[in-house]
Length: 407
Image 1: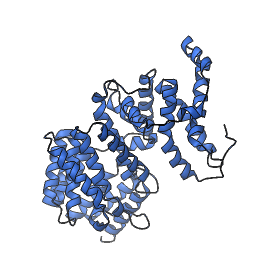
Image 2: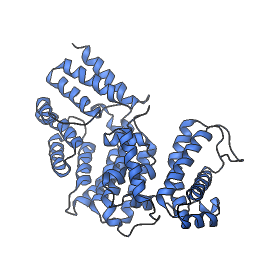
Image 3: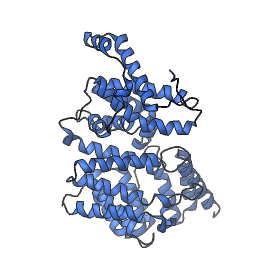
Image 4: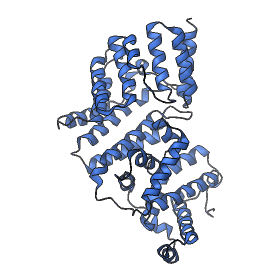
């Protein structure tokens, strides 16, 4: 389906970024107009596929209107085809497409966040659906965040949509009960932007910026919630280091080698103020602990001057609170700086992270620290083989070669 008013050819990368930006807006407009969220999500996904095929050669003058119109037509066609209930037949007969009137004048992102995070769904179903519907992440990117296969994640998203079929597009009355899942969605979205699970670039500024925007929006709605404030402090304190994480040619720069003068002091100051405010509330949760760790990194004048013992202690509390294996991995890195790499290696015994490259990468650094260069080289190579991000893979290949040269 084409639009008679179009511009010239554009790059696939530009189209990908545009679709990611417009998808939540289109979904909000279609779901608000036709009511059923799950049906609207199916229709918008089909429209996105059509746009990905057509837009590189002929981009519409009004891409959002194009998406809304195509999704609306496909949704109405589906209602007419199924004819499962008289209600849908009557609805399809009465609907007309006025796509210009449907272009949203307000941001529906928070409504979609809370709608997807339905407490009747388990977090393993609701959060992946939200990451796709609201954040525009691909199934592959979401699978990487959860350390599962793409096929497994596709099944989870399909099950979540099936359970939400028939749900109206409106802010749920029980939104407070959904807040924790909403925070997790925003945290995972930020992480995917800060270190992309795949692709040619280490960072995805579009994703991390959107996560920060949505977290600010959420914080403005519930300013008294300490964990929301903690999450906002965390993403700001972490984002502050982004300018130093890559070299001029895009290569990964590890924390120990970063030029700290490039860190954004404005974001650090804002994050610190938020963190101090939320810690004073007296209820310490996951995101406040993570923000405290980020603050300890940001306030250090150098890698060596970092208060690693406090970071290790914070990770110990966080592991007790969450049981997250990634926390154990990060704790081992901090422990290595305090008690040595041999002690850290014992912490990683029996740890399982699926096919994630991060466990192998950390073991590589620790084995190098204890002088077992052969084991270090093998771990770096194994990590490189599992890394889907080109910049991380290149870095790990370089580390394996560097260590092998010392054998």
